[in-house]
Amino acid sequence: MNTPSLEIKELAFAYPDGNQALFGVNLSVQRGERVALLGPNGAGKTTLVMHMNGIHPTAHGSVHVAGQLVDAKDKESIKDIRSKVGIVFQDPDDQLFMPTVGEDIAFGPYNMGKRGAELDAIVDEALHLVGMSEFKDRPPHHLSFGQRRRVAVATVLAMKPEILVLDEPSSNLDPASRRELADILRSLDITMVMVTHDLPYAFELCERSVILSGGVIVADGKTPEILKNDELLKANRLELPVGFSI
Image (tube, rainbow, N blue to C red; front, top):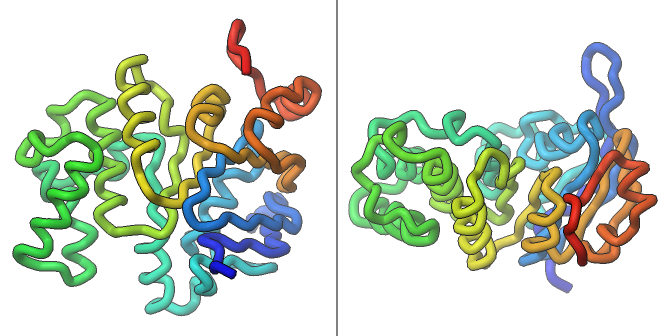
């Protein structure tokens, strides 16, 4: 049996102020799966994602990525985990800080020891995957918001991650940029976890959806079945746009 890309067992977490964010979460994501992580604000989605690469240390339960335990105390191991779990933040400007697009994409692989022609090839491949090859020498701040988000995706893809985690990938995009990003994400051969309130985007890109509410998983199934359940959506403060039908 193939090792899952992500295996979370009985994960619980409380912040220092005593706020309990997760209550015994169990989640398994197979290689190549695309899973939408849905839920209202404050449900624990971000907290869950931050456990996937050890930003939050695991206090109770366990998280494995490609069979490897996520252990924030093991500095060498956590470096490897963070190359396997690539998080694309909601604001691309949180990830882009180098003078040029090419340098931004090279930053991660360079720090993993890549140099010369090998590094150049990694950068060129990542740019190609997101349709941004011609912008390699441009300053990121000269790009549109949608273009910057694509470059942010490329910076993660350059690390050859096991899992691509996307935080609200469609937010603040105009319709054309939204469609272009969807086409790019659909073309990638990678395990994907997408945190989103954009239910049509989840429907378009993820065959499976998980609803997290109050720190527990309250639903896990095929995306069309989840989105057709009006009572489930209403109970978890999720809404389809008016006129959208499945």
